[in-house]
Image (tube, rainbow, N blue to C red; front, side, top):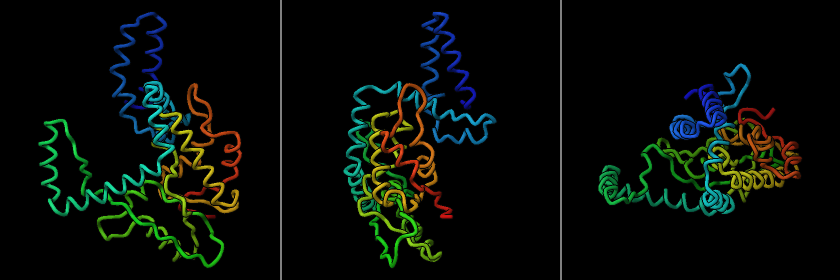
Length: 276
């Protein structure tokens, strides 16, 4: 569905409910679940071409949140609180998968998975093009850093390329070095995330935990906002700049605490393409 169709679908659903046509409303909402709710990328790019600047992703985030159970919300919050452990486990799983693939081959692993699916058992089988986990080598600084470099969790877990072996983090540091820009990578960066995995999947409490953890860390890393901070993924940068400090759609309150709302407004979060 297009963004406009999603909005019209909501109006039609509310109209059916107002006319007491409950069965028709429920049937429509069941059909809407995949076409309108689950298939949305929720990246907010629709707002860039909308004449009114409407971000329909906010509406979809609200839909997803309303569809979540209390149990799933609790588990998601737990995952946000312990994201460092999840990151470690994911990195380890990728290393194991890479070693198994080297021994048995990717095709053999796919054939094994096909047979196991018949028993409702599925082994992780990442695509060959998927990167692997990296070990972050922090640069030795000769002076005060020009910016704090926050490698996204995607880059930390999947940033090792399969083409020339260079990781995203290595490339960012290499380009910055050639430009004479000194970057610092915080030692405790693991477990910090921009909150997108939770906020765009309707997990309100998890998003709040992740967002506040990020702002707390940024405030400490940047010496209370004195040093700019950059990220290596555009969508993460957009989330950090635009989404953390605003009130979300619907009944949910702000993601950040009152203290962190002030801190967020004082942070110098920059697009990785510019430090001007």
